Image 1 (cartoon, helix red, strand yellow):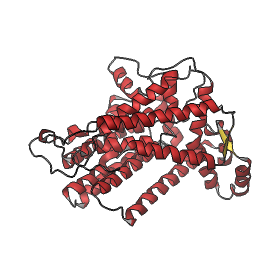
Image 2 (tube, one colour; image 1 turned 180 degrees about the vertical axis):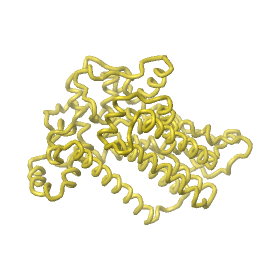
Image 3 (cartoon, helix red, strand yellow; image 1 turned 135 degrees about the vertical axis):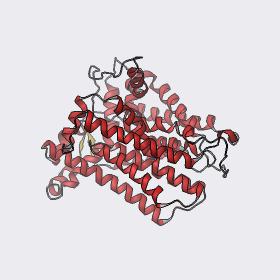
Image 4 (cartoon, helix red, strand yellow; image 1 turned 90 degrees about the vertical axis):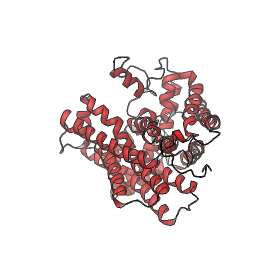
Length: 423
């Protein structure tokens, strides 16, 4: 699973989409900042490819380090259940969220209260839910046919995990869960030299369409709860700050929008996807004098250190001129805010580090499958958002690093498979 190839394809698809979508900038974008973004993205690709080249193992794992995917799958299910339970206790019992709250009310309560230790445990352990279904698929490839109970359990855990996130109006957990599971299934079938059957492609396309529909429905519901006109939102929302519809698109929406508000919301999703690169260019043109030196990109380890009294728990961004909360600036915006002129080097080194563990994925090293699937999700969403800067990306990435420990079995080595790496 060469994540750098998915990063290249994602950047190429985004570039084509940027030329085709009926959007135009509200600001004059300097060519130098667009070129800067392109060069930074190229450094990310180079760093990730270098990480794969340097990290690729030269021999099969020792028997003492054998990974049991079945053992890991069972343990991940239990840890995920504990995490989800802690999350629900923290949200509904400790922080005062009521079951009948709408999305806006839930968001306000969570913003005004601090998560408890129970909530932190829930966030860390609950992130294992992202891998329950993909590990069950891997287990079925290694052990053969599984019972219905194993499939239902893993699917139910992941659905609850996504549902908890949708309960606060967040779509990123849904995206990461669906994309990472899709990559895992595709890689496993290719590694086992099994064709992608028509039914699997149909399920994949249905999942993608489902994500789009759910995202549009969530956006429409949020607008209704705020009492805003969906049509007005494409002109005055946070995403509309940087981009607006072209005159032709606006005329079409004026004709069809009232009869089909979902079309208006769908156009809002286009702004949601493509506004980030414009926001980055606007940010880069302002020549920031203040930088955060890793506090935005590496917020999770700093937060954990702050909890034990070894640092600040949060970084205030409101005082930084030019930075706008609540919008995307692609993957590179937070990195630029952190490192400024050093972003070129930081982008290369960060993706170099991310690529080193991913190079170990083979059929006899399935411990790295969850990590690689999250990394591929990060690469696919690179032109839109920095997943390292959100809980939906950072927690699963950290959780995936513990999979080798959860599946380690010393006394009974698992059967070896071909080490052929699948693209």
